[in-house]
Image (cartoon, rainbow, N blue to C red; front, top):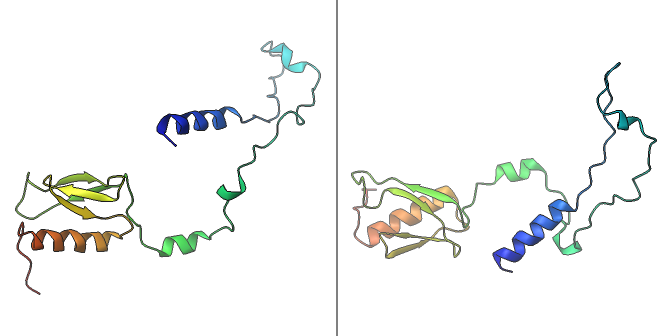
Length: 140
């Protein structure tokens, strides 16, 4: 699907909702909105919850403790700040992980970061920079 189709579907799903709440109470002696005292009309039959396709619904709920125990994984759209000691403007900057899951350093060094934790991404970037001769590795 293209972005225009997704935007239209999102707007349509937001506009399809119903507000089902009680009418607000007027303050005693207030002359504001006298039409609120009109007879109560049954509207519950008109408002129905929109059903999502079965393939989009989760199979089971996942407890938050399970998600909190796992490290954050990088994905497309994430911002990654790269700070290299001694470098102020060449490679040290904020990179955005591209749709294919990679960042491009210096216009030619591609590093895939999608699906990696922050620690794994640090190791991948440092190994790539050392392998390309852009930085010296630290002694082990």
